[in-house]
Length: 279
Image (cartoon, rainbow, N blue to C red; front, side, top):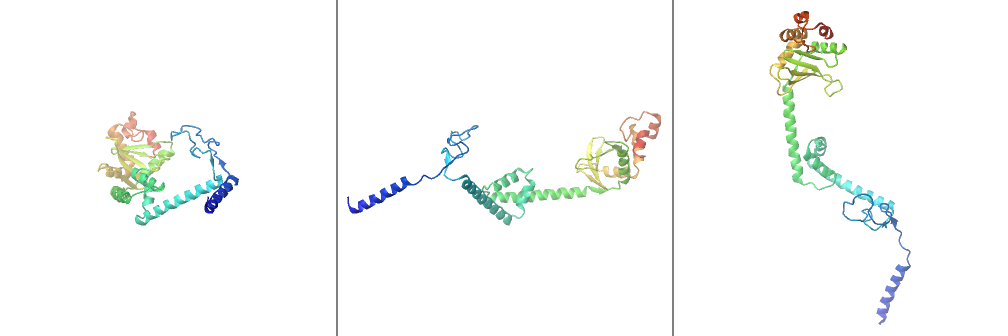
């Protein structure tokens, strides 16, 4: 053996001796498997018996605190990457993210794209362009509906109609319903989203015509052309309209029962309803 070979051999022996004499690095038992390296609890969807936390080793070379810091750093990097993606989308399509959040409850496409963005998945420019086109169509549809609603909204002086409904409620009527001019008008539930409104239904076909809010009658698209004029006649004189209805149909306009008493038939309305509704 040459002197050079002996020198190299000496260095190798020194390294081996240093490794064998050095104190072993500390390890930290896996809390999931208790150091066994085996899966415990429930079905392992990965199809093996290894602990998923430590990958079957049974311990970690990093402390729990260090692992927690690493997890937090990874989460922060992911959050920063997601925010960078969102910022890029907002720069190109202002307001798109907020809009998708607004419609995600009922629009599957928006919910899927938004979910991919929030999870950090790749979303192509083609998909974003499709979302932008969809938003344009949604806004156009909403604008058309708003214009149609405005065209179908007409002002009506409802003070006398309101007065009779207020009187009926104050006199104990829980679900007051008024019938006249071929229409049935009912008070919306007090705890519903249309509290205070009056629902208007065409009696013959039981067809919803719209609702009255404040002094405005908001007709649905399918409302009959004569509904508005009928409401005007009722609003002009609710009692006369009720009496006319009772005499024509033999049914009380306020309770919906058949008029059997001679006086009630002649008056076109029952005495109890007449008092309850403030006529």
